[in-house]
Length: 397
Image 1 (cartoon, rainbow, N blue to C red):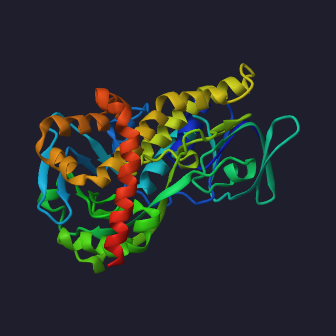
Image 2 (cartoon, rainbow, N blue to C red):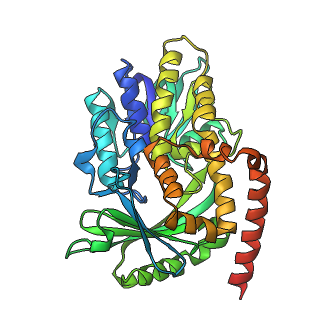
Image 3 (cartoon, rainbow, N blue to C red):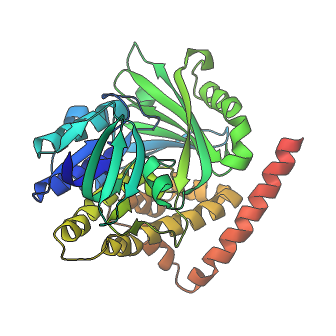
């Protein structure tokens, strides 16, 4: 079939881009290789700032509302911090969230086809894009790649693959007797357990999601061991975990091309995962929203390329991701004072809450350091080297 836009990948970024374009009057074909609803490895947290990007309520798929956290460093005691002014994060499951977002896209007029694995993508001599799926051929004026870190779109069209500097391992533990009282309305964060990452316990409807993530080169071989340690530290039996699965966390390289001609990348395909938190749903949905006006202008021949989308992301999202990367390296080199501030400083904790709410950004936070700001990136490089050496020595023994 011939349409204005083809979107490959029906995760939050792809379905959001498709819906936004359909609402602008464009004909959109949304393809995904999986049959929906389908599971997706992910913590499943939707921050308030992320939810506010959507023009509808996501409460039908919310399983737990988070207003605080249990924070611990390593194996030390938990410190409870509550945000008394309202909600910070909504917990869901990607199986439910992604299907819900696709349904909203279909309501806007998007043609959705699941179970359709794209086998090839090619730009034709006239600039249109040909997408092949099991013998069928679809042609569109514009193409949005939302098919993940190793997707067909970026590979076929020669886009750079995001660097994969982090990996995560997670599983679920059933809670047949209800959520433990200490976890009601809160997430649990175990910091300093994993190099370049952290451990988590996220409450869901009838289970908790437990996981650990960190730098691929150092943490990867040890994730299962650390996940079992996390379970025991929080009083869970590691043997009770189900749906154990690992996944990569793609992170964009500064200067990487995000759009060329009439094709653009969003979400994990673009590497829009926050380095410090490992959260990718905000990057997916925000890029899905941002790509739509640029694609609309391109399809309507008001612009010659999708470069305006790339420029927008370089202004609005990538500075935050770069600041997050630097803060991650500094935090993991010297975690003790930062965890202490999270646990005991109301001012520091409220600034962290502001990031989840969208009233604060990491880029703004970094620039608030005043005369110390120019030293951030040198300190981050030194911190990365120190952490790598420290964990290399520790794991060697």
